[in-house]
Image (cartoon, rainbow, N blue to C red; front, side):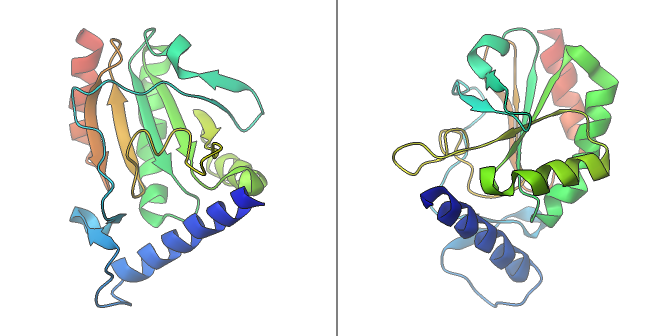
Length: 193
């Protein structure tokens, strides 16, 4: 039940995020607004470009284990941390789908859902409804109540996107809304390496 409470806390955080970004609250002490109106949890810093991308192993929506360490050298990877409750994520996901369709196997696209296993059916329903074909992973908590993927990557807000090059280094890190052309340039550069 601890996972459910962490998931519900995250869901509540996303709702508060939407209220803050819509102007419902004048100030929130634990959140720092970013460009595009997406607040992040204060004190959590995303990984910088050039940092080593942490390895992880979690299940996808079909229950299959995905091991990042085994896959990351094959092609550059996009990691999108998102939630079904995150409106900016819903805006960005079609861009991610277009990139997945454009680059195919030359680019690994992974969307890491922070909503947790209890909301798996809702995640699967949303993905099916929207027609997304990239791999959806469901983050989970470890024994210390830390997300196995989001916490090592310093995810304090959604959406957060990372581009990891073939060498396992962060090539691009962005919290909040992103410009498709900026991501496209970074992907082109990573594919040349």
